[in-house]
Image 1: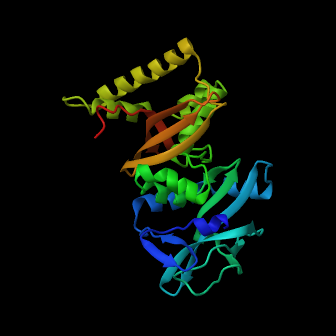
Image 2 (image 1 turned 135 degrees about the vertical axis):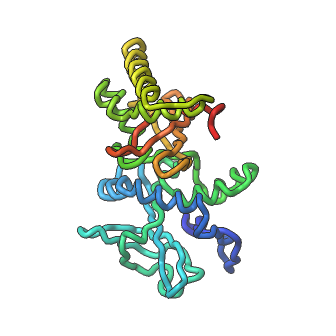
Image 3 (image 1 turned 180 degrees about the vertical axis):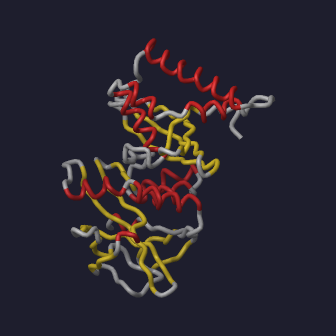
Length: 294
């Protein structure tokens, strides 16, 4: 049985003769919507890997939204490729259930705006596959091992490949970690917003806050940040692998990001970081104080 015959992209249940059960998730599901967004934000890694695959990358597939009038279905394509204009081509990899406009093993071309997921198998480990992870997240913990076994994949938080820039909260975190690795204090300071960090800190106090208090607190936070690096040195992230499994929206300019880091010795670190969207892009504020988190 092929890998795609075991993986499906929705929730509820539809029986298909001679094939495994279909899993259905409503399109308005928050976790699934984030999975699709995350897949598109990291799509560059899939494209680069597809163009120059490494020896440990053994499987490439991409999921697209197929329309049939008002009906739509997300379907995996195998043998994917992109043309010079960025249009996607591939072969329908699993039997459609709802749409009748395509059939299994049919080669199609489709606009890249309809991409909803991608996956690469790297040394038996799932990279990407964000809609698969969204399905798995909705399964009771006691059943997750059986789910993993049924699709024949090792599923952990994976390794995410957000671009290292200020376009996303995750990219801002990666930018700060890059600055640490390069021991570039100015670059690290450019990843921070101490004034916004001061506002969040002061908001937990039962007192009136004015601009002068925010400014003074921001100055103290910046000095503390600099002194800590001068005293203890720059943290090291170059040997770590990162994943960002959760993005919690507080408001349009404030997200709490969960970051998972794997150490070379097999250790795992999990932290939650406040991020803020400033006029110059996303910035990293600092760790979340769980006691004060609403």
